[in-house]
Length: 194
Image 1 (cartoon, rainbow, N blue to C red):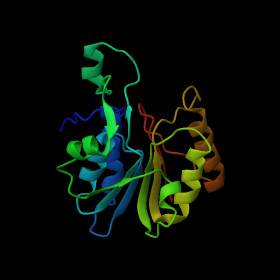
Image 2: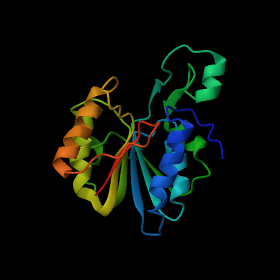
Image 3: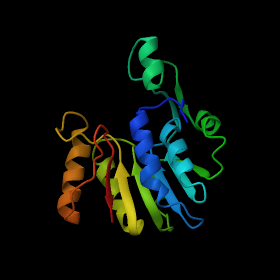
Image 4: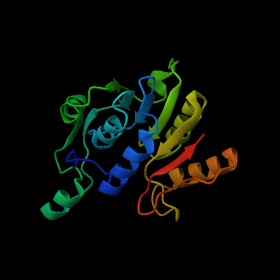
């Protein structure tokens, strides 16, 4: 299945998400994605846990999500959002309309969901990639993850070349959890099984 939804997740990363989260496919399963954009990764996670529920949290505040001017060939290869691809809840819903287990939550984590009570099986963090937001999300969600659950995210680069706060936060988690991060080869996906 080729996911044509615009976003910044590679095909290889989409495959990792499906495999990683499939272990949580049950009727009681609850996953949370923070930073859903247009739904590219949401679609993959939803199909990994068709029996469970996936809460997708995003501001969907109507900004243009394109990251630059590339060739048409590049856009077609990467599925990056083209200029004029607006970040809206309506566009997200259209892209994931066949994903019946997705529950969109418009707002910013953790600010707009401080009263969250549900324990979750996994968190996928792909929102604002800088502190204090990134670390605030980690601190907020960690206690809500069930034993054996997963804390995961996107855009981890071991050489700190991009998104240095994500890099530093993952390294801090390694120390705090006394575990080595899993970072599948050829991807910027990171995760810990708790």
